[in-house]
Length: 416
Ligand SMILES: *Cc1c(COP(=O)(O)O)cnc(C)c1O
Ligand SMILES: [Zn+2]
Image (tube, rainbow, N blue to C red; front, side, top):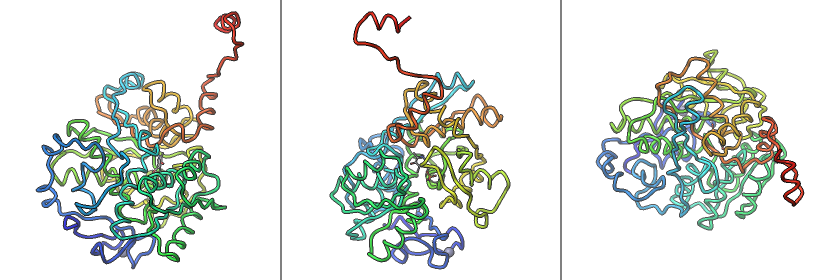
């Protein structure tokens, strides 16, 4: 890993050798999230845009020289990454825009964006010789770790709040994880997972604690820019809970600029549920995220429900440094966005995935978006993850199935 220079604390700026610390800055505990620093000159000699043109590996591992892993480390066999980027001309026209794309990360192996991070966690755990990997999660990170572990027969223990949607819990059980349904919130599950990892010596994948998760997530930015022929978009809309995804997108874009592969920074647009809008509030009121207290979080979009976003330092920097914005959407708008997105471009999203799209008309109405801009909406999770919300969403727009007897006469009655 000679391309990794250090792990740098986001609070004090102190830099550590990757072998010196495992997760967070010893001086700053949980808040002291570390950011991986790279030698871009070295990386630039190992990988070029020309190499990628001829690379037939259509997974995140096509970017392996940009990831914090040993060059010869084995990677899990599931196809993570290189999700489709669809042009969405009908949706664009409805919104008065000219160039809109939807990137569908519901197409990942366990049906959410989290596979990008869990794939890197698996490789790091193996490099460190871990026998058991653990994570706490609102559901998708758990399912991602669970599925990727199953692909290589890796034992793992998962902590989720007992209120996680059934489909996500089903994934864990089907993949054969040891599942702890925690009587409490995601935060309670997170804290218990940390204690357990320390007690038993398990490798910990927790978001905004393990410094390598951002690095897996940044691959989405590489893909977006490569899929657009290295013409970076003007804006990327993404939903925000803990803030690790938006921080990861930012990291990926900064990498590409450091390599000289893109020349302009897209603006990052963080979309939050109004009932879980810590980042949006902090951004609007110019509050310090290190001193702002937690809020009570309630939203239909379980994957972005976070009272105290764990990656809030990176999430704030992502929007501030790219001159983007935070947008809030109501639960009604999130639910309405599920059928709107599905009917407009054929992508079926879970509430947190549809939330990113719900933020776009909001931003257009607020005059934040120019009609000529090239815009990407990142859909982070598949609609089948939460069928209860999907059914609610169609009821909300007045779509109901027709009840029909199994004969043509009754069908004709219904058709009229
Ligand atoms: C985790 C998740 C998010 C939010 O990611 P953060 O890093 O917590 O901000 C958004 N959508 C889906 C589907 C997710 O699983
Ligand atoms: Zn520190």
